[in-house]
Every structure is written in C-alpha cells, then in structure tokens.
Length: 261
Length: 261
Image (cartoon, rainbow over all chains, first blue to last red; front, top):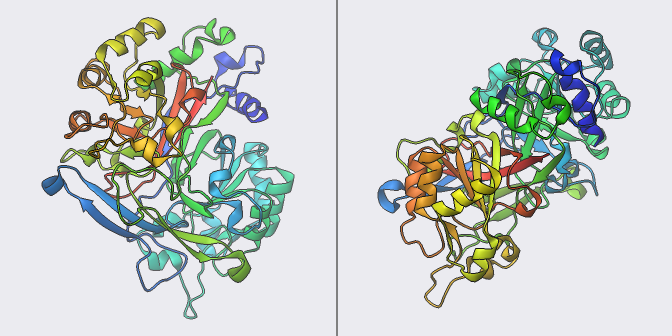
C-alpha cells in the first residue's frame, strides 16, 4: 500500500483544493489525458538483432469478403517493438513476464531528458550526476517509480538503419544508461523499472550489457523503444505498463499508457 | 473530458473528506488495489476454433546457459487467451486494434453477474431486463463504460473441453450477450466496450454472431476470456484495457488491469 501513499502525496500537490485538506490514507490520482507511449508493431519495426528472415510475420486466416470476419495470426520475438524485458531475460530465478506483480505495473513515471547531450554524442550514457541534477530541478525520484531516459532517438524510428546506427564494423551507436546511474536508481532510489526510447537500456556499443545484468538481477524490469516521450512531463504522470502475459516469457510486447495531469 | 468528469463524480462518492469539498473540474480516481483480469497465455489456452496444429507456438532462441540471456519467439492468433476484438474484426472500415483511441482504453468497469442463471442454463443470454435489474441495484450504467458479463465460466478455464463445452454435434454451449441487452448498452447507454468470461460475446450455439455484427459495427470493442471477475465489484472500479498494438490488427491479446476502490 506504500506505493499508493506515495501516489497520494504526489498527485495531490498540483490540486490546491485537495492539497488544503488533511492527509488521508486513500490514494488519489487526478486523471486528465491518456497518452500512448507505444509504437505500432509492424514489419518495419527496428530490431536489435539483424536477421535474414523477418522476425515479424503476419498470416491472414480469415477475411470479411470470404469468411464474414477478419482475423490473423502473428509471429514475433518477445523483445519486439515497444517491449518489456522481464528480470528473467538475464537473471536466473527471477520473474518471468507473467510473474511481475500487478502492483508494479501501475506507478509513477519519471522522464529524464538528455536529448541535448545525445545530439553531440550518440554513445552518451546517463550518469549519476544527471540523476542528481534532475532531482535539483524536479524533486527527489520516489521509490517504486519507472524512470525513462528520453534521448530524442525516436525521430529515427522510421529508419531501422538510422535507429540501429551501425558503424563500418557493424557496432551500433545509440545512447543508454551508465552503470553509476543504474546503481543510484536501483539501490539509492529503489525504482521498479528503467525505460528508454532506444533499442536497449545499455548503450549501443556495449558488448556485455552490464546494466541489464545488474538491474534485472535486482528484480527490475526494462522498457525499450518507448514512444512519444515529448508528450509527457518530467514528473507528475502515472504510467500503466501492460505487457502481454506470456507464461514463462523472458519479456513481451508491452502497451504503455501514461496518465498526464 | 466528459469521461473524467464522470470518474470524478463516481470516485469521489466513497471518500468523505474529498466529497465535502466544492466541485472541481479536475477528475479524481482513488487507487487502492490493482487486479489483473488477464489469463496467462500458454499452450493449454482454450480456443474458439479447434485446430489440428497448435495455434500457440513458442521457440526459445537464446538461453542463459548458452547465450547468457534468455529470449523466445511466439506465434499466436490475434484472438487468443484474454483478448480484444477490434471493431474491424467484423465491420468494414471500422478501427483496427491499433486505431482504437487511447482514451477508450481507460474507463469505468461495470460487472453484471449472472452466474446463478448460467448454472441452470449453459446457453443463457443476457437480456435487456438483466441490465435494467442491475441498474435498480447499482445505479445507471454510465456512458463510455466497459460492461463485462460474469457467468462463472472461468472455473472451466483449465479444461478446454469443459470451457468449449461442445455437444455430440460439436456445437458449443456457453453463455453470452443477447441482442436486446447489446442494443440497450450500445444505443441506450453508449458504452465503449462489452466483455465476458467465455470464448465469445455471442453465446456458444450462435451460427452467425449477431452481437459481434452489431456492436463492432457501432465502433465498440469486445473483451473475451476475461479473468478474475470475482475480485472486482459490480460498480466502482476503473479498467485499463491494454491490447498489443498490432498495425492493422483484427484484435490482439490484451492485458486488462482493474483499479479497485
């Protein structure tokens, strides 16, 4: 119930009428607008791995003209499009995607915008200093939040080549979380999840995914290829993280909805 | 914004401290508990169609032991497990699953429990009188709600045979919405969606799916194989409907989360 107490405190702040009343144990969220933070899934979706065969395949099994209804079958990787990495993606014995407790799927959304730094450095890694600087501007990052790094990379989404951004040796270049930022958020701020608008929480050139190794082993989930971050505030939104409930899944496509004040 | 005004009014009622203050245009929802209304997807999931080949296929493409990470690929029908039927499933020119506006994915949840009638009649069809009787007990069904019929069928989920419940001729027998109930909800109550804890909004023996034909053509969505309905109240919960965002999809597996007062 602590998460709701946190929500109560935070979401009350901008509402003066309510803020004037005595504290209550009932959590309160002020809805205004629902923002979809999810890319639409299709065959042009950029993927981390380059494969010879398409990883997203659609088979139409019934049509309105012939069958009087329309239906399809879909094949896709668990880590496709806007998706969630379950802790079990890298960490033995940790939650698979279906095992993540529902109360971790609805929480506060924190957006750290480092677009300006990324413009000068495609390999930028979020630092612990970036986190503490954010807190100076916006207040402390609450426990159990989901912290999403906004890098501006979404503008490349419609070109898999630009989004993957490989060099002549095939090494990809895009920004990610640095280990010191991850450690501060996991151990110092006790957040539930990390998210980013690129293909990976670890930056593009990473050979060994240290942030994946570390934070998934600590029971966090990751959100990758998050969309539409310019539409949500740095602080104050609520996020709904709704992955497909695949039994034993290492992850899954996820629908992410934000409620903005 | 009208939906939020409705939420404001409804969710304020049980909170006396807040109810005493002057009306405000800011919508307020009081969170308490997140309830997952979604079945876990696996190869034992009952399906409407009987097929020779399995409709749910999993291919493990990387393991912790060999690859230092765990990942899989999934193949499944759009209408599998707890899923959403988009209007385009039956109606030409209507929204595909990715086109449903996000504001329709977070709304009020109404649960109509007809478990007792279904115990005596597996082919029970919800009637308009059932809806008006519900309203006598719980108040008017608000516009833009999602109305879910609870039939008790979920107890059969772990046996595809019992859940499909075919007779000697292969005709399935399970309850559904009657046309008069659907017409009252669509045209009289202007709801956003219909849901049920069986394989289909139309009852099992239906040869031509009149409720699908009618309500999907009116732009509603359907939720089928909804889980865990005994855990949510008849009135007063908020529902998050989060389908996989498949471009051009006739429907998709959906994560359904309820926020209960």
